[in-house]
Picture 1 (cartoon, rainbow, N blue to C red):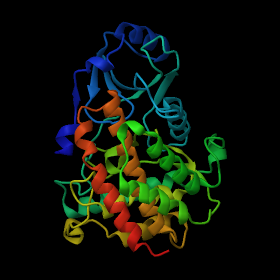
Picture 2 (cartoon, one colour):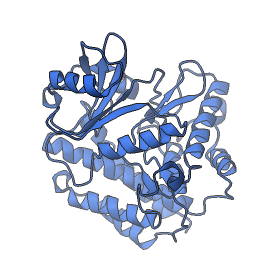
Picture 3 (tube, one colour):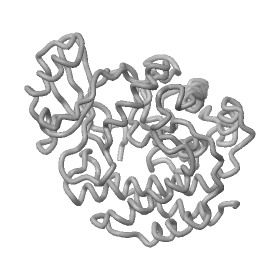
Picture 4 (tube, rainbow, N blue to C red):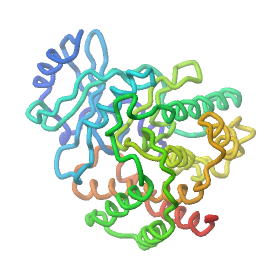
Length: 355
């Protein structure tokens, strides 16, 4: 699948995800300063979880994120949490879109939603940043590294997010959560490799370090908007999985790009990184550690296995939504093909882990 082609731009809203546009127009007139009709609605091609729409008006463009209609798993698609973390981080000057209002009244468009600014810029769908010169690639990687380090610099209580999640036991809870989510989604079926990973992860959980920060949960280049001409992150998107947790686990998930081959999400494995201007995994980790004042990441190998398992569990959830008929993306079936290769890669990493 050409991820750039499959995810770039908008399309007509699918029949299942249409809503009362007149009702939305009335709501925006009340809650979005400067809004002026008429309103034109289209659906972004990308996004596998919360349906995301572009709202065009004569004066401005906005983005709407909503819970999907139909049967959903308990606790999933929490757009209220996305809205809250965006508002808190935006107040600190962290690069996120400006949010206007949250609507929890399902009578407006059928499910809860929020509206935010449409941030101009580029979304890069492949981690090798195709089309850039090596020096520009290096600068973009440095910008990603600096931005996640900035996120992990905030004390949650100071920015109003002290109760955004539990402060301790993050990795153990996450292993339990995603194992349970995988095991409970019977519509998607079971995989022997995933079952083995559930057992391995439970037996090797590292000791809790007690450090708690806001974690994004899905920090990848394609969840960012870059400046049109400079190596600068203009906005970090898709905060559905954010919570309070271990910043090292959040960063290691971001490092999955180094372990996955090109063609599976945003993989770099097997590429000639020096010739591309891309820092090695070791250098990238060192830069993050320097920025955040840590000597290293002792549980890196375990966290890599968990991160791969979690990503496979997310895709397993997409498979379940596909079976139930409420998958948000038009290319969900193509994405599900990565499930077994990711599970196998996670198991290979588990066999090599130095614990």
